[in-house]
Length: 174
Image (cartoon, rainbow, N blue to C red; front, top):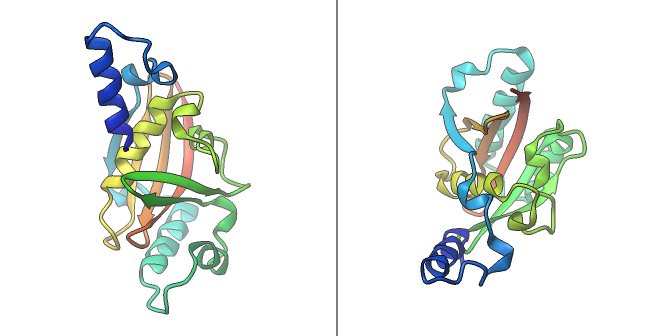
């Protein structure tokens, strides 16, 4: 089942008069204020952001034998600030969160944790939709996830049909 399937079940049971039937999946996530907005790569202007963009293109251009994504990130010196997601059966599973990644809502997606169990499942659902919609091996993408009080910018690259790497760039509080 995908997260969308679970949300449809929750809504169906609520419409049938059984709103608490799936107790784990109550609002606020179905009424989440998180919005995803893609941004042009030209918005990456600082030298650090430009270096990260260059590294993301290098990850895509790696023509060697397929290697484990964590090894690839380590070779480029990016393991400490990357978040790695495994795409499997219509769901993105977080498998690595670098220890030096800036504090951000992305940190809510911890390895081994179900995104719906996170403090704000709406963030996890917005991120799921974005990661699953990325096309494989095309180009890095810059996006922001924002709510009424927080905006998180991230550079994301799908390095294979099964793996997506996200680099949190900054977080702003309203």
